[in-house]
Length: 314
Image 1 (spheres, rainbow, N blue to C red):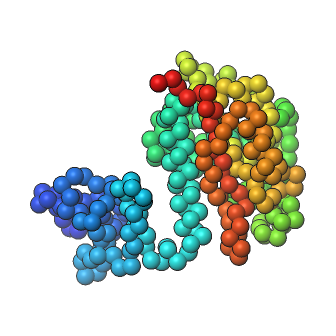
Image 2: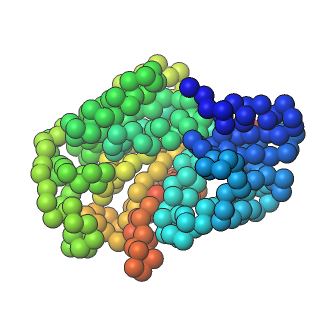
């Protein structure tokens, strides 16, 4: 049932005030005559929230102008005190926004989502407007069930219960590490950082080669322009190797590269980036995924790379 507060907000545009609903109890209100989004505010705009006494200007919110774009970022005082969490959340958003822009620029029509977990990456792409095919791979039974449920109402989101690697085989994957399940064991650094690495169960999974599944995944696309996203907890180069010569078909890619290694035997950032560049990809963005709270050092980056020669001819 709609509250009187919400009914009042719906009436405000009739008296020259624009309202953007942000969340329950929170709205963006402006005198501007043009409709606004959350990032399109100007000097005539306030952040307001519902309080026991009615509607009041939100205390402690800082407006940060984003260069010359005209966009404004509103930062709550409490959120701003946790610099690390704020930076990582912003990096995640900016990375996905950048990927969505590159998918549009290169006219990509199929995203290979390797290491999909429960579908977080795919859902973010959909929210930012990507409407093409998504093919997600997740090998563990419990997490795959969540992924399958997430994709059930999206007819162009296909899911596969398997891992990808250098060869067709079966292997034991460490489970119980939440979003960090890996085919590799933890490094000494990883054990010191994450207590979850000190306990582990395993599950036998199927591993396939990327080049072996591509025809099936791309079936029905008249002019396939695939993009490869990998987040496999230290196993990305093995996935990449499994593409063989068909890696040349990808217009771009994304890989989680490690500065500080969490997994035994995983490649460092330099080795990974050199491999991707040797295959014809060039970096378009680097975004921190995790940072040490005590030192500020970045542990892993999301590295976005595109194949410049694949840019559609203007």
